[in-house]
Amino acid sequence: MPLVTTKEMFKKAYDGGYAIGAFNVNNMEIIQGITEAVDELKSPVILQVSKGARAYANHTYLVKLVEAAVIEHPDIPIALHLDHGDSFELCKSCIDGGFTSVMIDASSKPFEENIALTRQVVEYAHDKGVVVEAELGTLEGVEDEVKVEAGCASYTRPEEVEEFVDKTGCDSLAIAIGTSHGAYKFRPEQCTRNADGILVPPSLRFDVLEECIKRLPGFPIVLHGSSSVPREFVDMINTYGGNMPDAIGIPEDQLRKAAKLAVCKINIDSDIRLAMTGNIRKYFAEHPDHFDPRQYLKPARQAVKDMVARKIVNVLGSDHKI
Ligand code: G3H
Ligand code: 13P
Ligand code: ZN
Image (tube, rainbow, N blue to C red; front, side, top):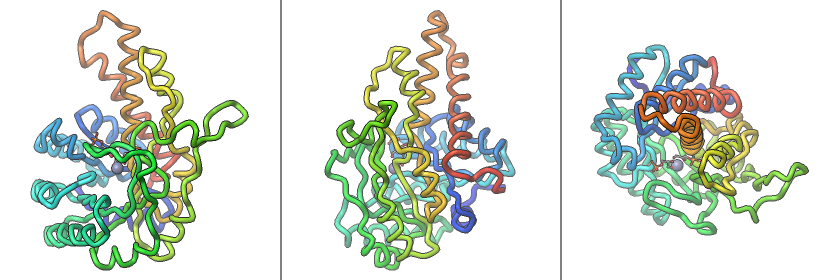
């Protein structure tokens, strides 16, 4: 089947109490790893491209690689989405260039400006059959060139969501309930220690999520910054020459709970980066004389596939939904 929008996948996910994984793609190995996993587990998927990914790999290369995945996996619904579009021009360029979904992220602007810019993108996108994700509230962490400092993030205000969705006509809404971008989502002092001495981060704000759901019944909610930063990959990186102390993510069981509610799209990027980096470091430590990229990228691609399969089962619940 050709690339799809997220319309039908979100409707089924909402009704079925599961979420669709949105994975950031930057190169062939990541696209192959993700799409092999979703094919084996019969899961729909969103492949998303950030402004930075586009600058790194080039729009045409990424679109053509995704088109190759569509040919190789004809039974899998695949949406191609712009992650964190920051201007009308960037969204327009992706809409005109083959994407089936775009995010306009004007969440750092005042409410009325966020509405106006989102509305402009929605009008252009809907005219071309493309869907739009918007955002209310801000997440901590680094996304593209924007770094939101600790303490400067703000939870979504549920009392604003109805007016925002009504006035913009957006198709899904990203909200801030305590997730954040990157591999350092919490400072150790924000966490408590469990009996095994492991740092446990504060809970996501399910009260904010539930209040948003009440005000937007049937409407798809999106969570950004939803990597779990699995201990095993942080340890692998640190064992083989890396230095990532205190990397902490969102516990998978909390994301699973959100996926059973109205959260239809869960964004995961850092976990894939950690799995690839850990495996590449391990490979070089064990094979110091190797220099063929096909050799060290092979276990990295397998690690992407295993990570996506793990997310489908532990977090998303999207397996066997095709
Ligand atoms: O939220 C941002 C994604 O993790 C993409 O990251 O801007 O480094 O491509 P990037
Ligand atoms: P992570 O950094 O938690 O993987 O979040 C990715 C994301 O939100 C992409 O938009
Ligand atoms: Zn994001």
